[in-house]
Every structure is written in C-alpha cells, then in structure tokens.
Length: 154
Image (tube, rainbow, N blue to C red):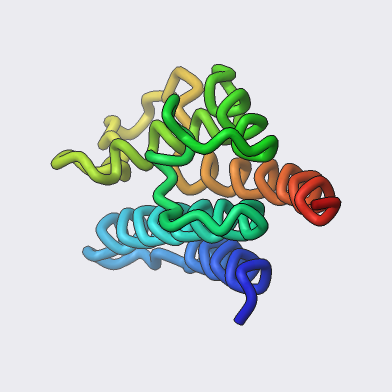
C-alpha cells in the first residue's frame, strides 16, 4: 500500500469510528469515549502517514510527528508549512496536536458528559470530542490535498 493510500485509509477509518452509534445502554458513555479515542489514535496514525507521504522524496529515517513538527524537524517545505499551521491557534493541526498530547497523558482525551440535572440547559461551547475531531478531519483533508500537490512537484 502506498503512503497516500494508507493516509486515506486511516482517515476513512477514523471517520467510520466517529459515526459508530454509542447506543443507549449502561455502556453507551464508555462506548462513545472509546470510539472518540480510537478515532483520535487513527488520526495520529494518519498524521504520521501523511508526514511519510509528503517527505517521501527526502527519504527520512523516522516519521514521528513530534519530531518532524518540532523545532528541530527537517527543513522541508511541507514540514515548514505544517509547523506554521500547528503554531496557529485555532487551526485543525494545533487542535489535533493538543488532543494527541492529551490522548497520551494519563487522563486521556475523551471526557464523560456532565450529568446535568434534568431541566437544566447546558451553557457553553464545549463540543464533544467526536464533533471536534470530525471537523478537524474535514479541515485536514482539505489541507492534505494542497500538501500533496506541492509534494508531487518534487
């Protein structure tokens, strides 16, 4: 399988997990959290696959996202573009990196929904991890198309 096909496959699988219905039994909350964190883990694999894909011409020995998107990462145009994107607050990549760090922390990335008392209206803009991840994946796919185009020029 080519790196491009693998990136596409991982993104598709992450979206499939996000679309999995949690159900309404006593395990629904745990099932939702598992699907969200599983999709986030697939998004991490997709990010590394993307990095492998757009740096194929450089024949890098490693493709760890922390390494390549960090300040000591290789001086490749696509990586520079991704580093700048990761540094922009509110960008899909900045959001993804922060959630991946949470995923690897002992608390994890998924959160239980607050059990507000019936009749209370939830206030705030705290979207579910799955909803935010879905938006992130859509923005990532748009960016990936542009990265592939510049990478193919090499």
